[in-house]
Length: 114
Length: 110
Image (tube, rainbow over all chains, first blue to last red; front, side, top):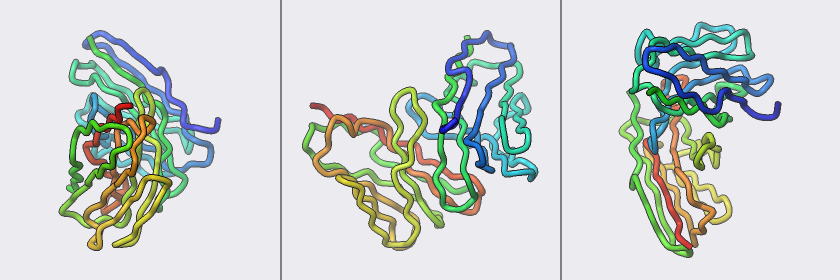
């Protein structure tokens, strides 16, 4: 597709359940990022994939969070044993190169933990 | 850790007024970007500034990068309701990912 696609767009889950969020980046974009955004706030970095290099996981808030990416395609962000503080919009972005190019963001997945 | 502070956090103005949003840091960035985000959507890139002192204009929006590359401003002339949104600055520095500011929520009233 022409843009970054994220699914689902909305997810309501019960506390303690696991959730999996999906991101389809723009074809050919080697860099992929996951960010978390709480209501009306800025973006909090979670994890970064660049080609076949080891991912930068320095932003993951706890070991309940993990992410995978197959080559330069789809990525999944998994949150285990969800907590209410995990409620947020999870945004995925891709970029062609590590230079000064801007990110292209998806519309996000709004996660609500009840 | 590189941090970006934006001010003001909230801004509500009447159509036709001018406004300035500020993005400040104690760190130097190699480039700085401005994004606008509307409800239910991801942020959309408006501009990238790279050179200290650089000024870029995008219609009624004027972006400036500080001489020391630690701060930036966004000025909107004759604001319109369509300018309403969350404005985010983001810096590229020592980390491989962008560092985002906390955002300025702008509301332009008709």
